[in-house]
Structures are given as C-alpha cells and as structure tokens.
Length: 66
Image 1 (tube, rainbow, N blue to C red):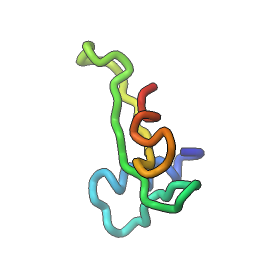
Image 2: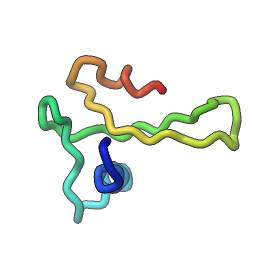
Image 3: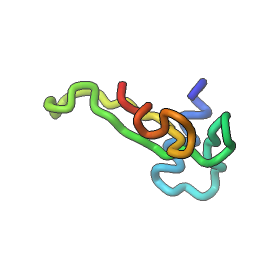
C-alpha cells in the first residue's frame, strides 16, 4: 500500500465495490485480501490498521500482523 489511491481500492474490495478495480499484489498480480487489525486488540477504542495482503506470496496473511 503506497498511497491513498491504493487504500481506496483495498477498502473498495472490502465492501465489494465492483466499480473499482482491486489492488493487486506486486509480486504475483493476484487480488489482495483486506485485513483489519487493531493496534491494541484488547482495547475497544484502539485505532485499526487496514492492510492488503496476498495469501499466495511468502509471508502471506502472516505478514498482516503489525
């Protein structure tokens, strides 16, 4: 995720906005999965981190942890 436009495409994929093209993995060109992680999982007021991750590439979903 490099810029705001990438974030918009990732969030559009999360809400199934079909008018926007999905953000693709730079390594394999597959659509990224959207992962939302709380900075402090036990705190309900904690900010969240939104990431696009590729489950097919090395690191995959394990790379989503902050």
